[in-house]
Length: 548
Image (cartoon, rainbow, N blue to C red):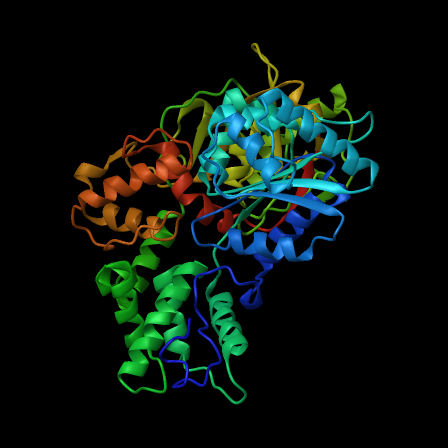
């Protein structure tokens, strides 16, 4: 459909339609990596099983799926399921329909499964691949997910016959983290979480779409300040970028303006979101600067609730020998496919386990830039000492550790004398343990029961719990500022006043991360709020291996 402002801006077509047109695809670094995961999933390297791609609403998952469909070769047969609200019988029928199998006869569920199995064997014999792609997979009923898992049992002696790709919102991660679906989760060979565009990528995205839609000689009508305002209003979500930019161009045409300034973006954002400028864009720059100063102060430390850790040996960090690098990404990144460049150790020898346990706390002290203070950090976990650091004991799985994207200390073994190992990097099937290097998760799973500890700097005066129905003053400003940088994003006022809507946001945030949605900001909710900022604070240093 032609936009009425096309001739005004010398465009051949509307540049900001929200339909997933591959001609307009702009691949940021994250989108390129996500597409690589999808191509990996349909290629021979997928090896059968599941590939999982998640992302917030409007970040481009469906567009990437369209790109994938354009790049697969003729030997790949795709069954694309767009409506996942199906029971197991309906799912199999939908897959047969997408594969264009004979549906002239009414078949029972078993007969449909037999028909699908015969098709998969025939495709395998011909050297072809069969892939099922399910969009909006967070809406799949658990019994249908179980049927999908059973489909991956269709195999020869050497190969799986079916590859399944699940596309969904962040809730899909929580769904697959359920204990009753752990068998399916173990068959996921690659995972990736698609993040929104950053400020520079947003500007490049707009320029790319205008270039595709423009006539020769057409200029970019968005001023630099307008592009910055567009990023703030959309939080880098491509779908919101499209709708706001389209409304701004329409307003510019109506007012006969050749250039789109930040005021037009402000007005367009208010129209699209239904919120006032203050709500959409937050506080003026001066107030924002003051808030940043407050954040710097608060992020030097946060308060801690009671947690107990068994007695730990001294940190033994008085001597230094070999040097070993620690890598903590500045922001969460998608996991690598199952095949890693570095081959992990296939066993954990008792002597190595003892050495790593002796140095876990000294290593964590180095992570936070306080070498030689490992005993102090262990005391934070053991005695709830107000020494400028907090410690939180958590119970979960590798996915929960991966969500935080922070160094943690994992507990191996049970009883009175467990071992504690410092985990500094977590990939899809291996972990980096200081000072040993890479270990297979299968090795660690033999003696890991899901218990781990997170340590971070914090203000001893921070309250143990914050009730959002009583939240006001400086603490309200700090928490709302943090919330405005998280997903889902808090888009309300960053002010000291009591705001009932903030409690609703907190409950939504808690649900998105699988926390108890009580609307109370306790230590665990607070940790998930500040984790990205803590990650950025983590010093990029080299760990010195402590002497025995």
